[in-house]
Image 1 (cartoon, rainbow, N blue to C red):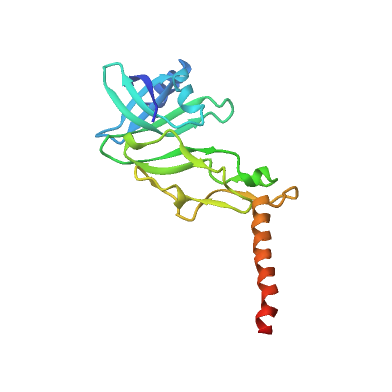
Image 2: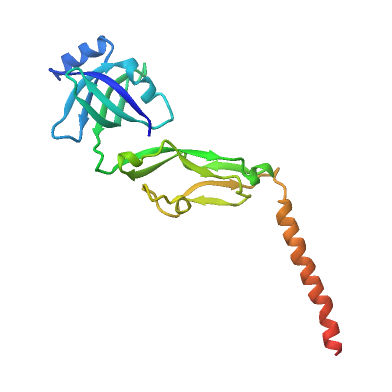
Amino acid sequence: MKSITINGSQRESVGSKATKALRNAGQVPCVLYGGDKAVHFSAPELAFSKLVYTPNAHTVVIELTDGTKLNAILQDIQFHPVTDRILHIDFYQVFEDKEITMDIPVNFIGNPKGVRNGGVLRKNNRSLRIKALPGNLPDFIDVQIEDMKIGDKLYINTLENEKYTFMHPDNGVVCLVRRSRAAVVDVEDEDEEGEEGAEGAAAEGAAPAAAAE
């Protein structure tokens, strides 16, 4: 998974007055949890643009002015209710030998056959929560949907991967193709029905001959 580096300064004072002064200076107060103790730091608001304003998932390297580098993931973020400016960010420290849980965006690949026949693709999950070691976290979860016909559903258990575990029920539906008024009968399905009908007719035609014997 791609990583973003945030250059921050450790905070000496964490009171409300100091926090307000940081925000007035264009800085975002942050806290890193998950280690031996919480680490309070701040960084310029613009430093978080590639981390916050994107549908992609990233890990983070927090680099402090004293040379300390800490690996983390974004845990929680607070925005101003009117201006949408970032007010506060919580991070969670990660370690290479400890599994973490993270939401990963789904990359739907292909145009479903059912959609080409007039059906509608419904994406129930645009991201999926997985548990894995940091080194096994993917940028995306690729999902092949090219062969999906009208009425088909794609379930979580079809996406199993040895590098990570899905934190969803096996029968959870990732996406499905619904019928619409404009939908047409699948040509291949029609052919299969025609073959079955022909075989049935042939069998019925053979029955009287057998009875005559």
